Length: 486
Image: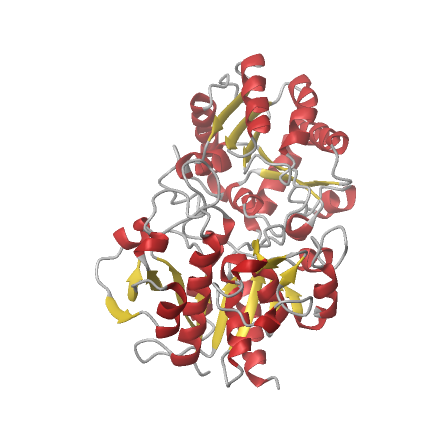
């Protein structure tokens, strides 16, 4: 089997820089693809945390087209950083900013984000055409709106070029920028219009990738069908229906080494399917850390999420009386909309010992919630894939999820037939309303009272294959098929 070279381009990659699931996917997929004969190099911006993680690197000049486009000095650094074969776009004027890679200290998007990520995409396109340090990829794989211009730049080069793949991690983020930036981001006049990158009076960097990539993927099969509808298509459903022949959904996996309860040093106690009794230590530890009463028999729900409308956390606030009345506990970790944050903080004050909330994100506490909660709530209104429910399956926390997107693809509902067959791994609810979420919480409480049934669900979840092995095979088939297509 011949080796196929792929350039992956994204705005973040774990463990170098992370704001969400995109980083986990971009960071974990390359090692799984290596087993399929796919050699991936990952291009990311030179944020301070990325540059600080580099011990040794080779330097090449910035591609001339990128220098001309930005009018700035820079370089491309190549290094293996924490196991990831990385190319780093180092343009200090664009990326030497601490904190969130997309927004300033005031929480507002950086006003030059269009220029920043256009430079990233243009660098990917130039590497795709001319290579870097003697290496030229056969495929450029762009992730989300920040890399969406890469397929467009390659399309407009109008010459022999590498094949392109565009992966949508969340269609809700279209990367909209003003039309008058067309020249500044080096798009030709013909790029405007409905058959180009124009999107409701603006330019959409995501649409650029969807319009011109050779193949489009989403991060779950169900989400790939949902985005073809007006309800799920975010204004792009017409384009996606037209391109449905090159659209497919490939489910995400997780890093099985980073998320392994038997070796996770972030936990109070390590455990596995054969020693589940040790898991009780993690529950007690989580209760202490979240200010909850130490009650071994209480059903403890966990939440690790952005606290936003998309994630359905406003509905959880509405359903909270049902959880409280059932004598259950809730541990929430996340940040997002101010009113939802305030709602959970108020719920904690009103229900001491029963509700705990920490606003923000802490990797160690996220692991502790997976290992210490009995059930994990993921009530998203839409969810391209979701990773927290995959971590929950791995850690023996029973997922309670909305029946949407990748949540419906990864959790087997505890209906009577699934329970009878011994294959249930969690609970699903639909329609996605506060009332149905409350009903799912009540159903979880009833199932939790039947401890042998609950233990079987935990065991089934922990036996689920949530690794990258299967998805990596699908990506490898897609890449190789793309190379043989007309």
